[in-house]
Length: 345
Ligand SMILES: *[C@@H]1O[C@H](CO)[C@@H](O)[C@H](O)[C@H]1NC(C)=O
Ligand SMILES: *[C@@H]1O[C@H](CO)[C@@H](O)[C@H](O)[C@H]1NC(C)=O
Ligand SMILES: *[C@@H]1O[C@H](CO)[C@@H](O)[C@H](O)[C@H]1NC(C)=O
Ligand SMILES: *[C@@H]1O[C@H](CO)[C@@H](O)[C@H](O)[C@H]1NC(C)=O
Ligand SMILES: *[C@@H]1O[C@H](CO)[C@@H](O)[C@H](O)[C@H]1NC(C)=O
Ligand SMILES: *[C@@H]1O[C@H](CO)[C@@H](O)[C@H](O)[C@H]1NC(C)=O
Image 1 (cartoon, protein in one colour):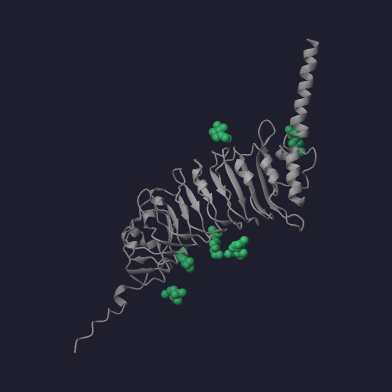
Image 2 (cartoon, rainbow, N blue to C red; image 1 turned 90 degrees about the vertical axis):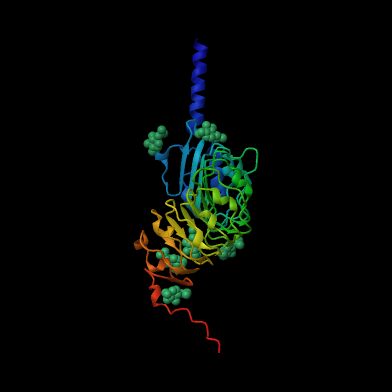
């Protein structure tokens, strides 16, 4: 009886101290701090710090941590960290936080590439590494221990190069993939995101080729591929049960808009600065939820549809096309009639 109480007491003391004073992930966090070059914002990360206690966090604008009930780091946010002048690499110590569900590193001056060990954090649901100086490839997710619950990847605003790894499209729950504002090249691989209304954001890269035809069967909540060197047809994105927000601006897309269907599904579409031709279809005026269109700087021609929602749209929506006319643009009748064929003499 006596010995078992002692045993219990020892057990209690041992485990309490493990969780609350030494902390399972303390050494890993201190390693991460060191790898980042001891930035000012992490000054309070010192031996024995109460990292699981959010009330003890004296600088939440630089870092935030939450823990599992057993004291393991479950989410880590690092933000706005600019260490001393030297250029630290991405702190691969983060890969030692094996219980991580949410990782969000943004506006941190790290250089080099994203270590592939990140893809082995098997519990990840959100992975955000944005607005850093990281270069090198987008990591692929093909390993045995890939995070199958991953729903959101944001790697925007870095300097990542190379092609988009097709293995991203094998993540079964991936719903938002944001690779905007990097230096990605090559064609977009044919895989799709498997959730009901995925968002794919690839703006401001150097992607080329055509959009995969498989995108015609996806009801994107948003597809944004503006500011690349993409071309060819994209008319298959339009229609019932299809994309709700489409940005194709600043590319070389070249297709006939006359036969596309603007359904009630769509609320935003930016086609500006492409080579899209044909006329603006009647469904453009009747698509009930369409509020944010931009068709400017294309090769569209002919009379604009009348009625419906046309009152919502100013001339800038249609400006700088080949020969569009009718309200809100100048009336078609004011245009010079087509020159009559020269009489044979
Ligand atoms: C968390 O930190 C606050 C502020 O330092 C402190 O008052 C509180 O007692 C701590 N909570 C626990 C459970 O240690
Ligand atoms: C994935 O999520 C489910 C449901 O929340 C959870 O039960 C499971 O443990 C998670 N898997 C991993 C590898 O984290
Ligand atoms: C990425 O692209 C930006 C803007 O186009 C350019 O300034 C930068 O040098 C490029 N970086 C790399 C690593 O290629
Ligand atoms: C893409 O680049 C343009 C021009 O530099 C900029 O105005 C726009 O905000 C960028 N878009 C995104 C999503 O980064
Ligand atoms: C449409 O796009 C052009 C070119 O990018 C831009 O100048 C214009 O302001 C946009 N108009 C509207 C209504 O969004
Ligand atoms: C675009 O159209 C406006 C209005 O017709 C015109 O003033 C402007 O010069 C055009 N811009 C270009 C780049 O063609």
